[in-house]
Image 1 (tube, rainbow, N blue to C red):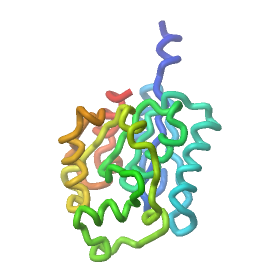
Image 2: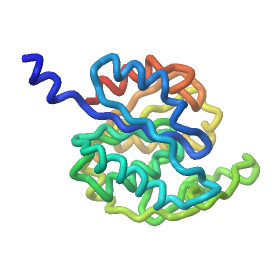
Image 3: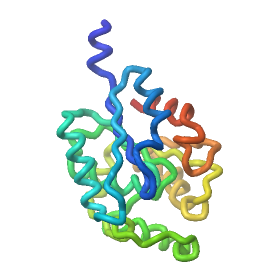
Image 4: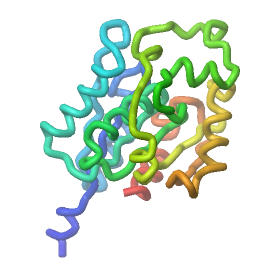
Length: 206
């Protein structure tokens, strides 16, 4: 019985936002590992150096090289773009996508174009137009719609102006688009301020 349990433990891959690194997940990683899961939280190459497709390739390579299967792939903020592109590239390895306080990607649009299409002035917010944030992402929207997905909304986020439309769309279309929806009373970086609550949701979603 114990062997069966070990064989079916979920693998987690946690992807940070555009101006962070993998260290933001350290407390969440600890909790998931204490529950017996394999967890990878890589630091992606910075946005000053490469584009969106390069970040996606980094995550795809990480998953295939470690022979992970049925991955719960988590993306915070800009990480939403990366996990969506990863799932489109290697869908057979992905079990669930989890978006944390992020946009919901649309094929052919960049992170910046998505946010600006909802009426948010990113220049006023002081966000730098690095290439990964302005590169459009192309993917099969119907294929992604079939994957189980979760959205975690941070109700005290400093990016509420940018994110409100996206989490409302998730709630409105949750049944059609295969979403689970959760809220955490935290700032944008809930994996730092509320790691226990983040980990609890991730453990439910395996």
